[in-house]
Image (cartoon, rainbow, N blue to C red; front, side, top):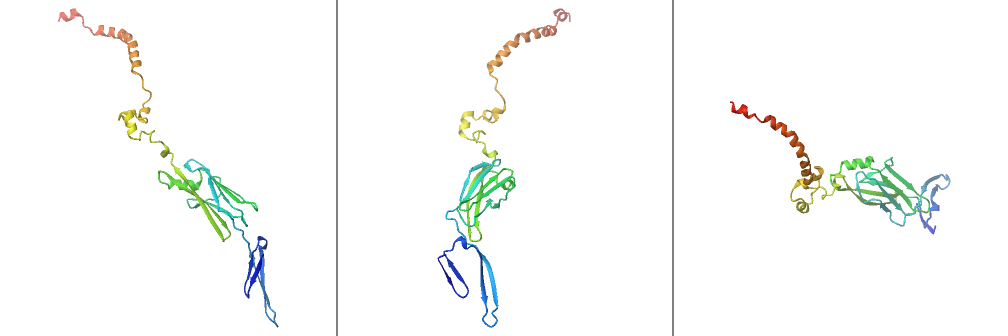
Length: 238
């Protein structure tokens, strides 16, 4: 402590260190002849703030609704250790089996917290149900606080797409002029509908099968033709 300054009602301490954290008290005494004395006390906390701004890293920047993701938030050395609170789209995240939060703090080292969100997280499910059907995003934020005198936050965005919207337009034959030139304007030859009709049998194979079957067909057809043919004598006698 470098020095003090005081008056009738206050004392100012300069250059304090964390060793001064603790209970402080003041004593007031009346003059003679009564000499009544009153004592009041209160706790003083000496705070050392972080010298660096908080940092956050994401393992993914683009996910689908079936993906998990992980985020790490780090803040510099402080005393006391900083509190780290997680939010996604302004919803506070609490530790659950599908919302895994870890926290680590050792004296003289940065404070660390990680967040792992699994797709079955109730918070994510609620957010996904209210999302529009096309691309949108999650805003992941970690808030750092030390008592009531220090608050900072850092946030990043994760793009989210539904599984249906991740199908390439080329696969669906929706990319316009290129598909029209390739398929000659015939929707049956498109990559989607053409493939659904099954394999195409070459015409030469069909012709070969027909030639092989012709003798057998003629063998069965000849007796039928003889039965249908009327006798000549019966016709002339009419």
